[in-house]
Structures are given as C-alpha cells and as structure tokens.
Image (tube, rainbow, N blue to C red; front, side, top):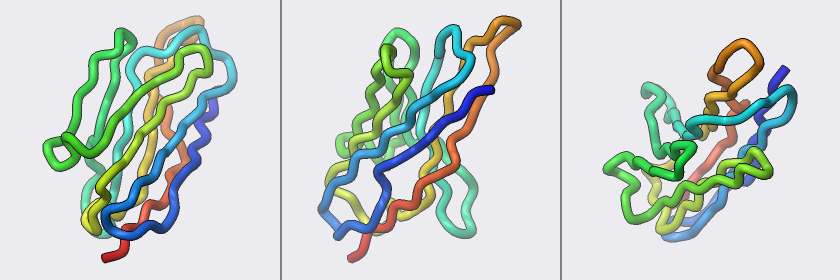
Amino acid sequence: QVQLVESGGGLVQAGGSLRLSCAASGSIFGIKGMGWYRQAPGKQRELVASISSGGSTNYADSVKGRFTISRDNAKNTVYLQMNSLKPEDTAVYYCNMQVEKMLGSYGYWGQGTQVTVSS
C-alpha cells in the first residue's frame, strides 16, 4: 500500500503565496516522476508542474515564473511553492507520483487540497 498525503492548501488573497506538500508512505522502492495537477469547478484536471527523478522540471504556461516545484527524495516528498497567486489559480490541487514497487511502477494520487484565491 502506498499513500500520498497532501497539506498546505487554504484561502489566500490575490498576490499571496502558499506552499503545498505531498508525502508518500508505504512500500516504496523509489519514486520516478512527481507532479502537481489541479482541477477547477467545471473544468478538466490539468498538469501544473512536474519534476523527474533527475530534477528536470516542467510547468504549465499559466504558472511559469510564479510556481516552483521541488522534491526531497529522502522524505519521498514533493513541494509546490506558489507565489503571486491569482483568482484563476483557485482549484483543488492533486499530487501524483510514479512509485517503484517490487513488481513494477504505479501511479498514485493524493486526496486533493483546496486552494482558494480571493480577489
């Protein structure tokens, strides 16, 4: 069993900052890619940022220059630092990890954390 637990969401005014964390626990041999997705009401889930096992990062155009993804492999944790937040960043944010187990690698999702940005 692998569990991903997210934290750090909340309500913030436009221009403010939040830091999301997502920690994995359970039977883990290693973790390949990690990423953050978000889903706003009535919209599809979209990729916000991802980071490879080697540290290469990728960002959605809408968050480039404002969000930073990072990872701590020793803690099996991925972070998303969100600065200069805008009302359009309001969504439920989900972390995703590609976890290596004994017989292969599998994708896991966090439970989601609400981020609300007021104007």
